[in-house]
Amino acid sequence: MEDGIALNLEANSEGDYTYYPGHLLKGSIILSLNKVSKIKAFYVKIFGKSKAHWIEKNGRSETHYNGKEIFINSRNYILGKAGGPSIKIDSGNHKYSFACQLPNDLPYSIKLDHGEIIYFIEAVLVIPWSYNLELRKEFGIIRYEDLNLYPELRLPQNREVVKKFFTLFKESKPLHISVSIPRSGYTSNQEVLVNILYSNQSDVDIKKTAVRLVKCLILTSQSPQKVKIEKIRLISNLVQGVDAGRSKGIEIIVPIPAIKLTSNRRFSQILTIEYAIEVEGDADGFHSNPIVSVPITIGNFPIRFEDESGASNYMQSSAMSNKPPDYSSRELNNF
Image (cartoon, rainbow, N blue to C red):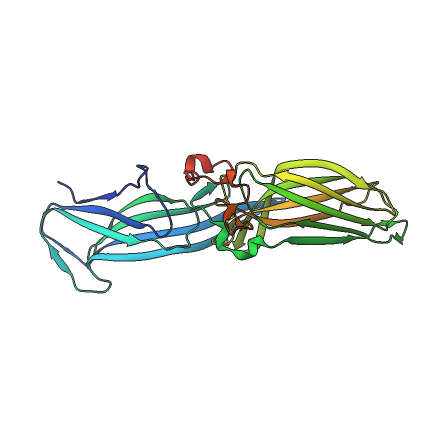
């Protein structure tokens, strides 16, 4: 018999190894020794981190960008302690149980091309004057967000842009664009009512207006410092623009499709997923287009509003699901 470690995690109610923040992570470890052995310590380590990495080339040179964030790094000693005396362990198989509480603010697991958020549990046998005996297993974190926990998501949002155009060394009068939405918290299958107000005092026509729902993957490098933003358009609609010297109000409903990866900016700073309503005016000629972006938060449980009787109702409650979304890695590879 060779010395070895067997690490067994207790599966969740669905029979797999994904857990919610705040969950009690339980399992057992079997330590097999072929002779009486001295050890310094035997512990379980739970570790979770995000990391981002990408490469940018400039001619023959290239720059590697790296970011890292630690969410959990805990040790639970089964035998011995850090810096303690050696302990003698008999030969044979020794079974130990463990239970570790996960923090409530862990972001969900995700694996993408240029970054990931991962978690693992590791059993470590510290042997004096020798290499440690280690065994590591990866597990997943899922979370589903109740938007009612964040009162600010009920508030209306407004963003404005003022744009001036330049032609033949002449600066135009301003184009004002104001974009408003009734609140900033939504779930899958809900709708966002978008109000656009143009005041075009310039001499440039806005031929049409694009209204989009965009997903933003934001990667942050600490060494060297840089932020990389990748955008994906989920929904795109074209509506009318506004002529030069005119004003116009436009109202459009933007549907939110089924969303697997909810907003996580509250829990992760290195690998962040955000959403926004983006309005872009198509300026006539060779002018750059004005763009207004209004951030929104997409969660899993919709905002509740009380009716006149005092009863609590869900806003477009068909979006609510009793089962949290599947954040397994096989589905997360496609951002």
